Amino acid sequence: MQVSYYPGCSLEGTAADYAASIAAVAPLVGVELVELEDWNCCGASAAHSINHELAVALPGRNLALARQRGLDVVVPCALCFNRLKAAEKEEAQGGREAARRVKIWDLLDFLTQETFLTQVSRRLAKPLTGLKAVAFYGCLSARPPQITDKQDWENPTAMDRLLEALGAEALDWSYKTDCCGAGLAVARPDIIDTLVGRLYERALAAGAECFVVSCQMCQANLDLTQSRISEKAGKRYYLPVLYFTELLGLALGHPEAAGWLARHLVDPRPLLTAKGLW
Amino acid sequence: MDRLTTGELIPATALPARLLAHFSVPPSVCYQCRKCSAGCPLTFAMDLLPDTVIRLALLGQEETLLRCRTIWVCASCVTCTTRCPNGIDIAGVMDWLKEEALRRGVEGPQPEVATFHRYFLDSIRKGGGRLSETALMQRYTLFQLRRRPNLKELLRQLKLGWELFRRRRLRLFGPPALKGRQEIRAIFQKAGA
Ligand code: SF4
Ligand code: SF4
Ligand code: SF4
Image (cartoon, rainbow over all chains, first blue to last red; front, side, top):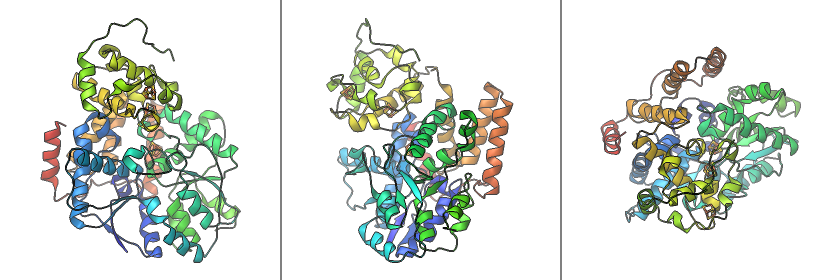
């Protein structure tokens, strides 16, 4: 099955690990990702915060490219997904209905469709037995439903269902869609320390050994900051932050999984070794 | 943090008129249930609660709103907008106020956030359509150093850069040249950015 793929800027840079795991995992479930030719940055928080016109026009160009190509478009970054959807809604509101419609998918939703989940659970090379994880969905893949068209924005379950299919234990917790504050990570790191510190504590209280995420900003914000937050709090947090695609690759026995995991700052390998998953 | 309240205020009308026109659900339908503030994860860093922002906007209190910290520390998590029983886009109002503050050249209490956003957009424009994370971080780090030299913070940044670099996660060259770069330039020009 062919779909358009909009990686977004950080997957070309700091989230190269996420990009690698996505590229490796998609073919395993029979998906061919065709990178949207000549795509541009969606403008992210910067555009929607200080220039509304850009915040619609930049993703608008990508939407036009996707329509030209005529394939549904899959987006790994929660913010890019949200901006593309917002541009689509704003067009529709302005009465500019597109002649050719393509569906904009959040990568997590796309890869956890029933047909893929069934395929995956049948082909597990290494079930993730004994791994206790909390799924962290973040803000923008789900909210606001008027933009995202999601049904389960307060309690999404796609990642939990995937984890169960992979044999891991997806723990229940109330902070699935809480904000990690990624947009302020650079300008107000002190705020991140509070928000993310709270997520660590809540994850531990739920009995988690790691986070599983589907957004590279959430990943960076929970992972790159962990040593700083530990230092400030006088604690030694060890909570690896894994992409769901990495776990998918690991469970399906992809030979390159070790390479992706080695690129995180909080090294997940000791945890996986202790669980006999390595 | 000390918070302002609506208190004894004299309503003004210019700002509310423009604000109401911008949103499909006019913020004037707010009945002050404060659900937006109850669910907001950032209130600990705010000087005005989100429901107060809506109230003050309707009362036309431009001076207070355009100078407040709240609009800049709002993380755009959109919990408020999602949960408002009246469908008011509170997060959108925050964005609208940020843009208005910059348009009027109001110097707010949180210039770091505005600067970061501005550099971010500059970087897309200069890069011809895609962001260069490395260039953005270099420029922002220099800005911070000039304002408030902090050796410990600089070392932390450099160490992080190194950690990413050795994991092949830092891109040293700019983004690829896009075929649509003229089109992108036109988009930026039209938007005045
Ligand atoms: S959780 Fe954090 S990174 Fe993820 S979408 Fe929300 S603000 Fe962005
Ligand atoms: S949730 Fe909506 S109606 Fe309630 S106070 Fe906030 S803006 Fe007003
Ligand atoms: S969008 Fe801003 S104001 Fe609304 S809940 Fe999130 S942080 Fe609070």
